[in-house]
Length: 375
Image 1 (cartoon, rainbow, N blue to C red):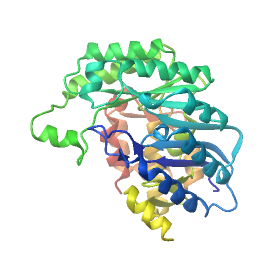
Image 2: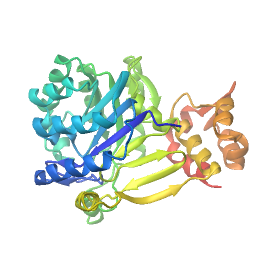
Image 3: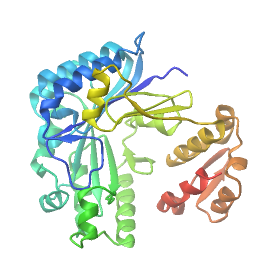
Image 4: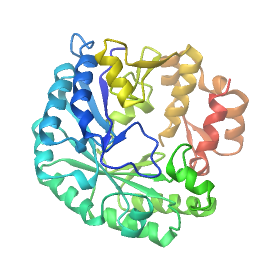
């Protein structure tokens, strides 16, 4: 299918947080102009331009770009990915970067959602997480976004070292007080190669106990749903009508364009991933070489298994008849004994023509996915 979604990776941050393993460069604003030149060249292959229903600028921190360069970024991207009527346009933002001038640029170019990396409203927790903003920055960013009629999404992290259940509940209360349209909650992970991974290995940091992390996740579900949020994906909550449409393209197996260092696109069963090093990406593209570092052509069965897993991340699960129509595979046969095992264990359930996670399955979902991806 012709993609109707596009992702743009903007790899710049003022500071790399200790837990972050994303593709980015910190303190290298001198690379912004070469990045824009490389992005323009990479985008030139989108010919004719491809109209999109969803456009997502992630990072890194897109709002790290000064207003003039942020303007240039949007001009380049929208020339190749013009917006369809009613398109959703999301931009990730660090609270410390958000100001009136940058948000004026976003509003001018049709941005509809600001995804703010709040992470916490507790100053001590933010320091533990190695963030470079303070709680007041979050409030200011939300107020500025609201003044420009942007929908607001807040990212929150739980299970930080030393965090208590009461502390996490206070974060949830503070987030709800700002009346956001969408909230994403993520348990802190210690990814290999990050500063936090090394610090934990040296005994400088300690992971939260599994029981405490689970209690925090349950607290988020209960608190946010009680406040009127729809729990629509494992980590995501939205007010009615405010789901992230772009992310739903991923979860429903849709095709999408992607540009920038480390960006991964998926079109016609073919996955391509660009070079993750920003410097190498710039050099290769400006030298006339391909930005692509990895290519994977998924066979029909592998593509169906991925669609099964991504679809089950959504709380409504998958429509079995629609899954068969789209993939050519019967989900129960594809899942085989492993799927039957999780159904028997009441972690998955078939109701009517839908296969979905149960509440018990939701709490252990990360342990289910490898079973369903395995042939």
